[in-house]
Length: 118
Image 1 (cartoon, rainbow, N blue to C red):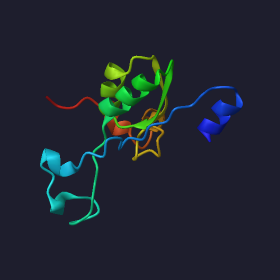
Image 2 (spheres, rainbow, N blue to C red):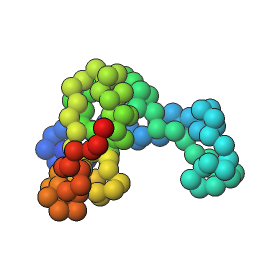
Image 3 (cartoon, rainbow, N blue to C red):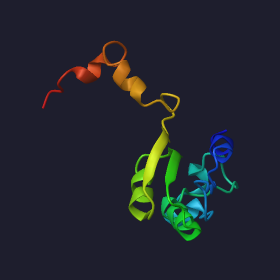
């Protein structure tokens, strides 16, 4: 949807997915039993540095991050040469709406507003 909107407005779009590079999780010590899909499945790690390098090689002038994990976004920002903004923050708990925790701080998440004992 976003690509179509941007292209309809005259922008050239270059996309790169989070699993760019397809580095197997075993390279960092993930065992077969620890895989989300179970033993025998192929699971690639996210590679935000590779994502940034691909976009750098394409000569992007501006990047829009959609759904990068916290931490991965910081690595992407560090290595991307072009300025980057975030359209969608990845947040599985709140359906990619992390501001919901703030909006719910007076009700469901009010416990977060209390001081924790030292």
